[in-house]
Amino acid sequence: MHQQHRSTADRFVDEAVTALPDDAIVGRESHENAPAIVVRADQVREVLSTLRSDVALDHCSCVTAQAYEDRFETIYHLTSYDDRTRELSVVVPTTKTDPVSESAAPVYRTAEWHEREAYDLVGIEYEDHPDLRRILLPETWQGHPLSMDYDQHQPQIVPLREHANPLQEDHRDGGTETDTMFINIGPHHPSTHGVLHLETTLDGEQVADVEPDIGYIHRCEEQMCQQGTYRHQIMPYPDRWDWGGAGLLNEWAYARVIEDLADIDVPEYAQVLRTMGAELSRILSHLLATAMYALDVSGEFNATFMYGFRDRDVVQDILEDLTGQRMMFNYFRVGGVVWDVPEPREEFFEKVRAVTNDLPRKLEEYHTLLTSNEAFQVRCVGTGELPPEVAKQYGATGPVARGSGIDYDLRRDDSYGYYEHLDWNVVTEDGCDNFARVLVRLREIEESAAIVNQCVDLLADWPREERTCQANVPRTLKPSGECYRAVEGAKGELGIYIRADGTETPARFKIRGPSFSNLSALPAMAEGEYVPDLVATLGSLDTIMGEVDR
Image (cartoon, rainbow, N blue to C red):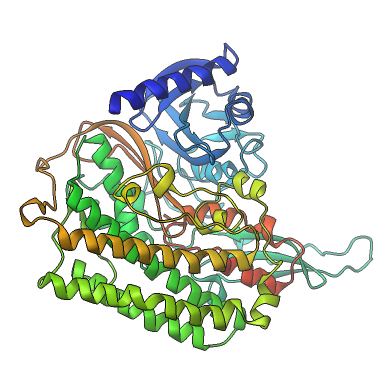
């Protein structure tokens, strides 16, 4: 099967190479997830434009930048929204002395933020980038923290001009007054769901421009993972990228990439346990998103908010029974899960069924309170519009993309775990607005409950002698190679790229947070709206700043 995948990938890369200019490609590489081509730094736009238009690679899922002893390197991880099996990595090396590469932002809008992060942390400059400046660190920061010659002990001085009034230059032209006004929303504000700063320009009462200002948390998650060993020390971190309950989904992203690199086969029984736990985790996240969104739109505590937390508590009780933790689960292990369901098994399964069987009745309450509520409809229908082609340009995934009618779900399109053996549907809505995204999450809770029920039935009937929770994994893992793998997280495509160099720790560990790309689409969604609409639109993205400020 693995060999067949390789031959298909080879044929695909041959097709891609044929479409490209002869002098653009300088080499080929083999990554675990996809073939890779190495292209010249001054031909990036032409190569990516051709791949997007002629080879149908319309999804730039991730951009990884990294430093070597002798060069810098950017990797564009490309795939297709319509066919996830079409996957290609475009590697762009630059010299250490002149780290300049063409920008991919004119081809994929999502690369605009990704390249700013690469410039900020690694130091690669992207020619003709529309707005090349730091994105996570202050503009005055000295040096690039992920470059190999970075001096972490150098002083960081912020000059007085950085504290200047942003309105010191008058917004009047030639003495003619305008209605343009600059307003700060956040970073410490309930409606921003964390330390997110929206630099908003209003024209009268409408949003003329909004710029998300991120980087307030400084998680350093990638660097911490690069210092941890593969076998045990990295797995606890993914839970902390999303404190909304989606931790098991995040753990699976790391498990998937390291198991590919180390060639580890997960036992079938453990795959069912993973699938059940992951969907309970998705329900937990979507209930929080629904509860908090009701708060965003109404502006006050309401029944939906309280119901959401009531129902989350019941799901959290189950996950606590399964994992031993209420929030930072740390249940997955390389090669499987840490342990089986708690004893007595029948009692645990009945508890799970009681929750999932009661969800349809509870979801009816949410629909009565929210989707059938005329005031909620007025606030959400027709606001925060994100057409499918714009969503694809920004690399939107998860409920944000599916709310724009994009039929893309990694559980089906790049199947892993036990999903391909179960009966479930990918949920899409064609409204392309705030209302559609609410509908998608509520309907996905139903689908997740159906998946959980099927997993419970399978686990209950599984022969005792075949209940293997972990593969036989070596105590020390020292893989080699490069791999980008992703899972369908609660917010969308959660991907991890690892470059393994034969040691116990990764040489490069890159996290592709779905909220990062989804949030970058906010200016396109909010232009022309009113401030309350902006708050509703931001809330509909269900961003979590822990995986934006990785």
